[in-house]
Amino acid sequence: MTHRMETKRGRRRDRAVLVVVLTILAAAAFAQVGALEVVQDDPALATAQAMFRERWRVGDSASLADLVAERGALISLARDDRSARITTPSRARYLFKNLFLATDDHVVDTLAVSAGVTGDIEHVVLNWSYRRGGVRQSDRLFATWERGPEGWRLIELRTGR
Image (cartoon, rainbow, N blue to C red):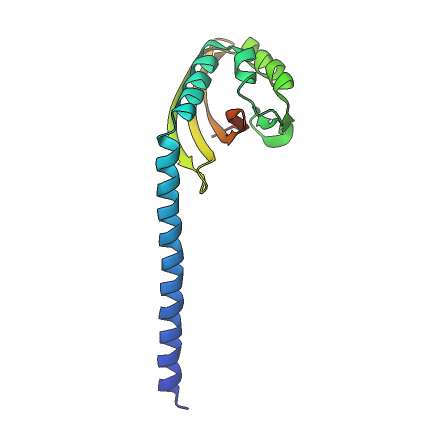
């Protein structure tokens, strides 16, 4: 077999692999778009997120804790993940209460939304600005919502830049 024939076969194989990869990526993109439409059209999710933003803005720790999944959520409100752990709704109430005692003047705006492939998960990035000790600061909040038997609930909440 000549080098030229091996090269042609190699190119055909490479093209075939490229076509398969592009097909898989396109299918994933269409699935993502479909899931996004399902999530964006879900009034229960829109209500849960609006309640979250409003409760966060006013520092309502008890109501925020009601949005945490019954099995708990991974919560880390520190600048690093050392304090990240699964937090039950009752523990989340005290965690939020301590946060709001140390900060005030909260403003939360949604920056980005990304739906999970199944439509039962949604990731949200929020811009959070607040005052601590009279100094204006800002952070990002990364929230993951999951649709469950009790409706849309938080299963993860982290801060970061």
